[in-house]
Length: 334
Ligand SMILES: NC(=O)c1ccc[n+]([C@@H]2O[C@H](COP(=O)([O-])OP(=O)(O)OC[C@H]3O[C@@H](n4cnc5c(N)ncnc54)[C@H](O)[C@@H]3O)[C@@H](O)[C@H]2O)c1
Image 1: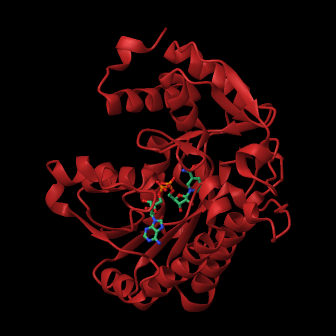
Image 2: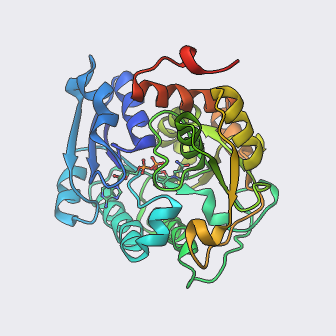
């Protein structure tokens, strides 16, 4: 495989880069480093397979650059996007441009050059649907399009619809993946991702700020389970034209997540609650839970998550210790 990974310097994209080059493939990354970091690619670029990786700094909204880069590959993993609640709430227009026009630009180039295409969509498309075990055909329950909070979900849903039409009408070999909350090393907490943010607070001895009541639950999938599935799906002919949930159905309330982080880090930090209005500004709406049904993915490629929530929490703690040069064993209680 000669693969282009848009957003390859980000959290998921850098793990995908590591995975693909370890499998013997060649990878080119296109990333504007807006939320990603070059250091995420250090293992790939400086490791034994470094000759098979290259990184170009640029935007997916640059049609000429995208065309030139897609022309040189046979496979496109499209991960670049404006992500994170803080980014979407504060830079709504720019985010929509990237998530709508940027995706169309990459999709169109993949079609022009006959490349396989994988779209990373999101569980956000289900909006406020709280069914336990959201199936891919579940209805979307979305708030007003004038609430910027939903613009990410709307853009990703249109990305899916667009991709689907390229498959149906233009014969593009494309697959869509709805990722539920995905966590692991290298994920930044700066843009609203709860697990790395709470771990950082616990390690700094600061209060862990839980937004809302904290009774809302979430499911966290480990990036080490997600990435191999993405690589397998794009090579699976029966996946073409379909959308797949990917995640881990193990639920945890955000209050319990914070308690587990405190226990595992041995932190003396308290947990404090912040109203959504103060955390995200006006117009924010949340959902009680979001639980994936991954049976479609299991039936096609045998997907089963192998990492528990505790594994994920420990991986994020280890990663943040590594960043400050401590070993996890020195500080993690129990
Ligand atoms: N991590 C999750 O929980 C999760 C859940 C659902 C969906 N997703 C999707 O997975 C993909 C990867 O997300 P992530 O969690 O790794 O986030 P991330 O922020 O780490 O990665 C996104 C990458 O895209 C890059 N990027 C942003 N705008 C760009 C542009 N205009 N041109 C080129 N590069 C650009 C960023 O610099 C970053 O490296 C995204 O499409 C996201 O919507 C992630």
